Image (cartoon, rainbow over all chains, first blue to last red; front, side):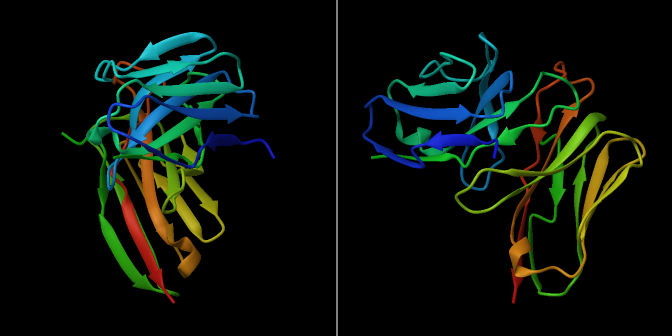
Length: 114
Length: 114
């Protein structure tokens, strides 16, 4: 089945220690997104890639970076995690950037910062 | 300011009951999607509505998009414990400056007790 896969499902890191979260997709979609979701809150868009074009949301901290080496994979790098970065990180994909945009989400990575 | 208001925020019912949850906004949406999210998992797309007044059915779930495309409802008939989860609505605002960015509500947390 075509799907969005995230690894690891659970990640524990220490305050200030860089961490990388991974997302892959077999849907062959052009767009990949990263969201941050904190407890009892709606997902918050951090950035997205349309093919190789990167688009950062205005309020995404510089501490968050992303890489997309090919169509299938996208990475979220947190350079110096703080306690406030503990959250569920969701990867999503869509075929194009259009108004009837359907986004398909992965299962998420739960990040804990000690 | 929350652009998409979902109500109720929490709902606990007995198996077999019917329920309706609402998604309201003062903004017009070009499309609106409903997702269900289970604890520790990513949101799963249930339906996309794009036309004002549109009604879509998915087994026991009925989705309606308001005539003015500012609101939507989800009705569940004869709820089952497997319907338990966080129901999120998300849409693309027509005048939101983006033709792809999803605005999420905070969700309705539904618990169906056996």
